[in-house]
Image (cartoon, rainbow, N blue to C red; front, top):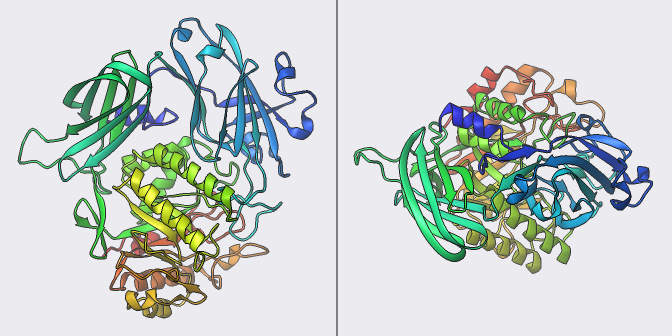
Length: 583
């Protein structure tokens, strides 16, 4: 893509699926906590305002929202007025929410238009039938509980943050916007690159069964490389394979990689008038013979654990540019990737990772109480995450579970083992092209593409000795944690130390603040210990990569390489010398 195209997409709420006609609904909304609501909602608020104000998309528990409610709330209420003209109502209007935690009901002008459950994923409603020319009102009622049998991620279920869990989030926490389309429109595009055969599998989903044509224009930079027009009859699903061959048979296709994050632009035009702009990267990720390969070249992954929290805005970045800055800082410190921990990040994060060339592990937020509700909510929201994030070439690994959270007895419990195996095969059915870490940390099943271990051992010599023979290690594990479930044996999957380090400075470690192991007394000691641990991992004969904990301090966790305000604790150049070293 050209610089102009990159910046144009960056202004849109979801840069991988762009429409020309849209309007943002971020900004000031009317708002109420349940204790402040005096009348029935929404009926009694047709002609009166809610008692408070909030800045969307920030949740009410953070300073950036303007509410900064630090007490636990189980229900919140939103409303706002917007204007549409008669011409817009000749087509469809899609009301889109980036994410609302955890479940919500939505009304337009007093009519209930739908509900959604799941706190991390995008959803939408067609609302043209409920609108009229002039002013219209949206109402949203969001509910959240302390229940642990549904995906929570790092949101704590008690009053105050503790250990590695943080402030709870309720309500809208990603962008809200309207898209204006014809009556017949594209609902989803699924793009699957095949570098071996130099083609792209294009799958397009329509809002209903239609007949017509779909024109596909593929650009590299601003050069039109291919136009294909497809005809279809009485279907809501179009499936076609598009060749990505170069005109000059000597040249290879333009692969996507960290060093050369090449992106193709894809413009789709439906015969009914709908137009959507997407993009894709031609890249292949695979595991074979105990190694990981990107575009058939061996890849050593140097990842940073990234929680995606900000001091004054919690799970929502203070501005879209802040997401880009985090990626730039990650690269400047020498990392080639990030493990986005326990959340589905704002689409702009994955977009800038696509553009700037950062590898990403995308991780499902954990539930914490195994029962039928957990199984349902986990699998339901995970499928939504897969669909939403699928097209980003930066994402090379899906992480299903973390450290047996929500499956605490998976070591021996056949039910919990069946759940993680089912989640693995479900993910593989949706996406056979990426790698899967099924239970990242310990107690790995056989059904995993990567053998991932978390080890916060502070002695580099012990760390180095522990992993000299991975086959032998797989039969034991770290002290207190077995490497595999009882029914599983190591299948020579690529081995990762997918969490290590977590060191803090003594000057930060007061009160409830903490890092792993003893805090470093000086910056010099801090750098030396990080260097020794990292070099120990680099010396391991079978290690395919690592993930250092972590990018920033988050609340009581003060083990970041950066402060919560994104200031480096030691010079970036010093960190780059440690983390840019490759095998």
